[in-house]
Image (cartoon, rainbow, N blue to C red):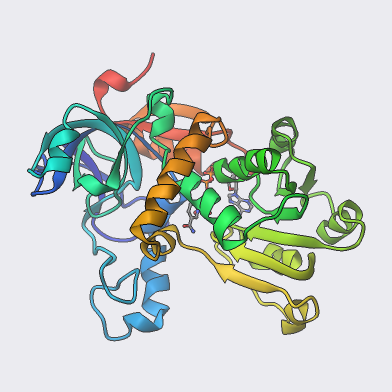
Length: 359
Ligand SMILES: NC(=O)c1ccc[n+]([C@@H]2O[C@H](COP(=O)([O-])OP(=O)(O)OC[C@H]3O[C@@H](n4cnc5c(N)ncnc54)[C@H](OP(=O)(O)O)[C@@H]3O)[C@@H](O)[C@H]2O)c1
């Protein structure tokens, strides 16, 4: 079978190769998934460039540890190349390695979150049956390829980490992203107001149509000035940043009393400096978020109730994701180019079976 793999990290993305590799054999408790579609997500770039690896090498729990791990207990190691790329996808369970749960899934359409070393940018993957979700009736197959990462992160950050209250103000960067649009829809549904930061005209009308209360284009407008006007000078209650760099510093200066910001992405690739008093004066706080570590700390009951809540929000259309293009696995270079183009509208999906490539 074919898989998109890397043998070493590279910031130019020229390290991706299409390789012929053996079809995986599912172990007990695992399922073999024939992958139909897999999205190109920013987190995939982190696995290609080695960004997670370099961040994890600075985490104290990884001192003197090899391989590096995402978690202190070392239960979730960062794989070392060579590995197959792709964090999530949708497919059909073709076989099971044994076990009641795995056997029950045979023949079903499932959404799954896998990630390297056994990524989703491949014709087949094998995965722990507990990590796949039968696609609910009413969810389109291509949408199901993006069923997990962004919806789970949106839900977790807004409702759990920040606990956003009805009537409050939430400021977010990267608002034109798939996740940013989910936050706007969730705001309409839950009754909180959103101030949305974009860097170009392309996303402004789309966000307004979704129900964004305020959209600020930081290429043309002054962020602090616009947030001052929108909030009547009080600043925002909550903020979510996935860009970093100087924008994060400016967002900190928009916080209201007891404001809470969550940082969850580094799209600019820039680190930032801030003056401690920007946090001290409003008694504000900043939290970091990484979906895998958030989920790992939840009880079984909390995980099940999260799965139920996500399904409801999916069916209500809150987590819909615009799709820009569907390209065959072999066109991965073009898929990456499109997904990295400023102002592109919607996700790029890789069609992992020839039969799934549209006209
Ligand atoms: N921490 C976690 O566990 C977790 C989980 C899920 C997602 N995330 C993060 O969430 C973010 C959004 O993911 P997504 O899948 O929704 O993204 P996406 O749909 O692929 O969209 C990417 C967006 O980022 C914007 N962008 C890219 N580079 C930028 C820069 N230098 N400055 C400002 N904006 C920039 C783009 O703006 P234009 O439209 O102007 O090009 C685009 O709107 C990513 O950072 C991702 O890694 C984190």
